[in-house]
Image (cartoon, rainbow, N blue to C red; front, side, top):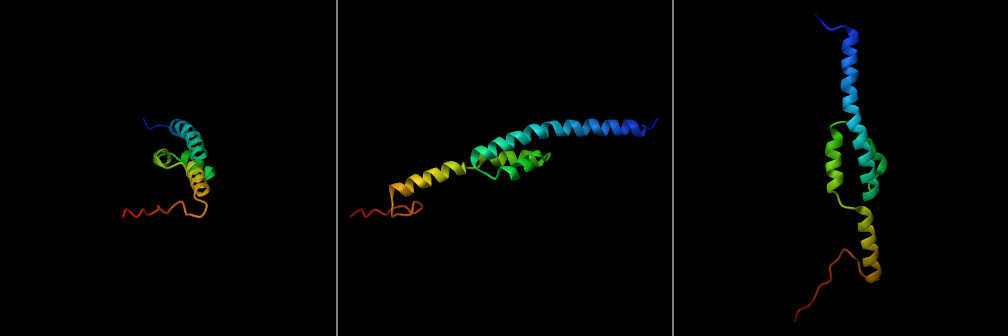
Length: 95
């Protein structure tokens, strides 16, 4: 009544495929999010293909800021205030 080696192998391949297919989908989603947000694409694509880790990585990617837009805003602020640092707020003297 014990399962044979072939049955065990077939079951393990079926479990692996059921785990691999969602990971492939999440890998492509991670690639698109990383590319859109200006993050390192290769690193986040590999992280997104790893089962279980990909869920945590995608939660991070969804919630993180968009680096491309931050760079554009910094460039606009730097062009607006040519001599001022865009990260320093101006002080107002309310006398």
